[in-house]
Amino acid sequence: MNESGKGSDDAGDPSAKKCRRLRWFSGMLSPEEAATGMNAAGRNAERLARDAKRMLESGSFATAAALAILAVEESGKVSILRGLSSASNEKQRRNLWKDYRSHTSKNTGWILPELAAKGARTLEELRPATDRDGEHTFTLDNLKQLSLYTDCLGAGNWAEPERIVDRTLAQALVATADVLARSKVVTVEEMEIWKKHMVPVQGGSLETMKGALRSWYLEMRRAGLWEADMATVEEFIFGGEA
Image (cartoon, rainbow, N blue to C red):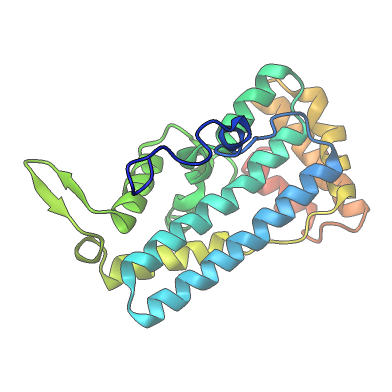
């Protein structure tokens, strides 16, 4: 209905209904397509993090927090797209696209700075930051909602963004976004090497996956795409057990 109470002009137009919802792609990704998407997500995460800083500096703490959380979510797309490039079956592909469009599945990494501050240095120690069902993912998603919208909570208490988010909370979230949104350019060659090593081990044991990850790093180093020495890489992957 329009403001006059009459039906809208496009009520009988089938094409108008088609335009109301985006047509999401959910197919397989080539190394080139994955690299393009990862780089786009990285750039956008950096943009959102910059905007969050500006809002923080202007004193708009709730908006700064919301933008920082969006930056975290956007940066989380990178690892999901990497996984999509090496998906070996239809079920994996469907689940990963679902994760790509799920807010909580994309924000898992927001506890990485906290884990690192507590001394986490290895792949195993940082695993909580990949738990897509972890309580921390819902905490951040709820905080995003409270940073953007008013709501009625608990025993009928009204929540208002500017009363929920203070400077300290906004600063912490912006700092986290600043760390996670620092992206590097992903090349097609990098993704081809990733696919070469990771596709064959899909569904394998954790140790098999770790071995494939080591092989990927090694070939990346030989190709001049990675600078870290292998002793550091092996310490990260195996935790000194290699």
